[in-house]
Image (cartoon, rainbow, N blue to C red; front, top):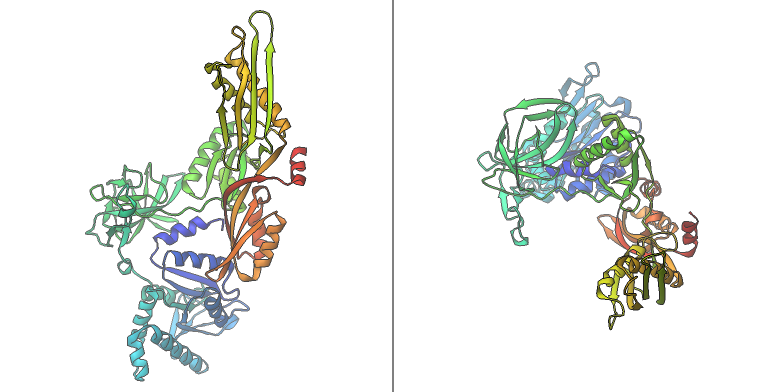
Length: 608
């Protein structure tokens, strides 16, 4: 969950994916999350059951888990030859050929053999199953199946490809990547069953500054003849070459040094060096064409999710969704020298990672960093030290409590000071009343007959606003209050704006003391998606956190629990939720409203 954005932005620009499963563990919690994300982006997949040579490996059990947990129609196109320490290869059930890998060459070479006698029955049953499954989704195979005609391997492969591209079926292969067994056949399966850029429908986009009616009215085909269009999906600050921007080209081509339009921000950018990235190696190229992924150096304004295109044919693609941060901590440099470096380093990291947010808390003056989980923020702290040499300390931020009144009160105050020379004089009558939650502060002037001159009224309002900044209970700001100035008096010589401001501030504080103040806390709207097995554990944990369950609803094989929970109880929730759900639940939360703190909690806050 901490690195959701990495998966989201990768799936956004990919045409196909390989889902890798552990032959021992089967479908793990994170696999479920990533599978759901791939469904969201409609990315066709093939499955690879890895670690077939481990003790406890079970290919059939893993395939069954893919079908039950992911609700995916899995089609095994291979049968393993041996298992655990006897795993030597696999049988291709479409071709009915066996592949035996040579241990001496670390699996780099293999022999193609007839299917061994002991595997013949299992291979025929597996092939029969492939034909049956394909006949359900493909008319050509169905016709041959019912007429008992021979179906060639190539026909099965073509039909399976069609179904894979529509995401109706998911081919399953097996192997051991560590021993390099089965990886060669997996790469062949990428060509056989996953889409090339030409198989993907034209990508939709909108004109710059589009209205609702114009949304997704433009399209680009994966052709070099079309105008250039690309999506920037990742940014890396490289200490040697500067800012590297990764992009996927959807149409046309781009050459080094070309001027392009950032349609999202409405500015021109110059493409510097163009690079093709091969893991940790980089290759300089002159141009990058439709269907390819590349990187460029030195874009000034471009951030994750921006569209780059031909200035003559502007188009804006849907941006990359950055999930809202769910956890935040205060961070500060250990030394004065680190202060300036930390600000610049955090800005660079936030540009790289859209799920990392930072702001300065106006009340405490702390720098707050917010992210997707405690591990996410811990890695940010480590990167500050490792990459930028900034030593920092991280602590919990203060919850932004508020105060308010619970009953209407009238109070008057006369402020008179004589210190030799001109004195200070002001008298105000204030009526304070509670407002409904979220209504905020309201000031009403009911002065009649000029008992207080018009020029002093703004000073009264300023004094009241000043006093609201720190309440009388614990110094938290006061909210949801209506203050009415209904009477008062002045002195022609001694009255001044300063006198009325001080008088109004003191009068309001006294009125609040009489109006039975309470402390308010921010309440978050929380949504937890978890499997049925863990619903009771999650609800029990939320009740312990003073949560209020609003409702439950099924969604894609899981339960969605909606609740309102005080923010003060949510620190460390990411870790605790993983504990109670074996890592299979995810949550999102956002601010909802302020609510009165229970008396026993208020006592603890006041004591602190």
